[in-house]
Length: 351
Ligand code: DNO
Image (cartoon, rainbow, N blue to C red):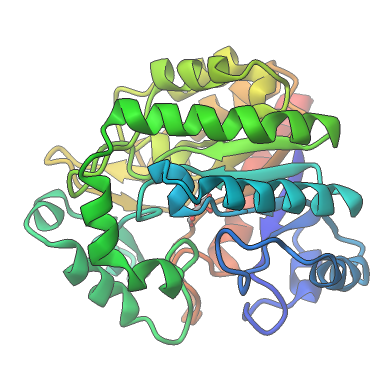
């Protein structure tokens, strides 16, 4: 297991690389060019800049999260070929600097969804929360407004460009059924996977978060059968997964350790975190510790250990603790604690 840590870039993340370097066992940063709009080609000069910054701290840049997929590709409109051509160029440019894994997602309009970014937990810390009934009674623009309140920090996956066209996007998605979304994903993968394979890049799709339809939009990367279907769309070592326990784990029907064993070497990138599910369908993100949430972290790490996992792993969203002012879910402290918990389990298993 190669431990990495998400970093939003120089001037864009409050956490300096020098601090990341001090978290035990962290080998690299998980990064992206956050100022390049979805659909645009990533310029090699900008990529090299990040490489240079990370190298100063002996951190690798093997994993990118994410190269976002333009909505035209998900919608299957005429302009998709142009955006797919750009995506291929980005894959090639990333391969040139030695990137190994590209994480992406195929969620229409929105990336991850919560109703509260700073919900207080019993211990006085705060964490991201999903309130089922609240979401069901909200319209999408209320949610966007809620999210835009966090002016101090940008939210990954919620880039303003994609929100500008919210109303039009919803209109366009009216004709996109789940089946159509599958077709569009297949079209995209048939184009890009051969390029990824040729350049020794592993594409790792992120599951939908939460793993069910919201605001009537189709969502397909949600459960075991669907992931099996995805892997069959294009059979290649380059067509793989970001296995996110927090996203898939919001649905109690997903047996995560079993899925890890089944998908094995198709998991290129592991996102490991806990959530506490409530009976009414709400869930809140907790510390990584098993006892704090509904996901048995020991069983997760054990499953990775059993399959001899050599891929990349990162702690995922943490709570906001010790007064840290940070981008929701992406503080230093709780994610660093999460890493130590994961290492604790992993190293014990190694013994
Ligand atoms: C949220 C992240 C997601 C993830 C994308 C991958 O914090 O887990 O935004 O990066 O879905 O494409």
